[in-house]
Image (tube, rainbow, N blue to C red):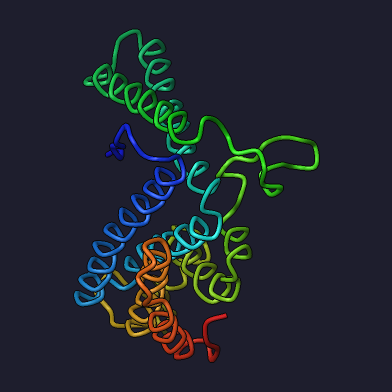
Amino acid sequence: MRPRLRSRGAGRDRRLFLLRFVAASVLAKSVKTLNAVVVLCDQGWTADAVVLLRSLFEACVTVAFLCKHKIWGTYLYLEEDMRGCEKSAREMRELGKDAGSVVAGGSAVEQELEERTREARALLKAVYGGPPKAAAMLWTKKGRRRRWKDWTVRDRCEAVGLSSLYLALYRWASCEGRAGVESLRWHSKESASGPVFQAVPTDENLVLYLRASVVCFLGVLSGFDDAFKLGCKTRIRKAMSKEVRSFTGRGHP
């Protein structure tokens, strides 16, 4: 869904609207994700809950980064979505040509992606007039304008003071949530007769995963509060620090 802007209103008001639209959308998604984590943990599928924990953490960092860099952060975020739609539409066309025919339903999807690209480009032009130029962080030493994807999750964590959470949560959640060698040890155990592979529900690390998910959700909520100036940030951060301390021994930075 693309935000609809009224024809009236100053550019600054429109930029604030876009920031709040993104923050509210991320919060809505995070509510669903947190509930999904609770359901998975309740049924014993804790390893799969980690995959969603990783998503919650990325949402937390995204909102924090956008709220710190309100003007150009939201521009880059929406621009990246536009580029993604544009790339997907191009790949759909190329796939259709290579196959000698259009993939089933591909033409309709391609048209939808192209329409989304046009809408996003028109929106960014109407609100910003073009890419922001003032921020020094937007430019590399070689004079190339940076894009949203040029900041890794770790870069964004460092920019908003969440490096400790990156090390405490994101690194192990990424390793455990993927089907890589590092994660395999969580799904097998050695026994006298050989390895035993675990394909059944378990409550191992259940409390840790739930608390970590709550921390990430509170981070999203804190960013939402910052975008809408609701005045609840101090209470949210206190609750966040309490949960962080429960599994890292340190409060929120």
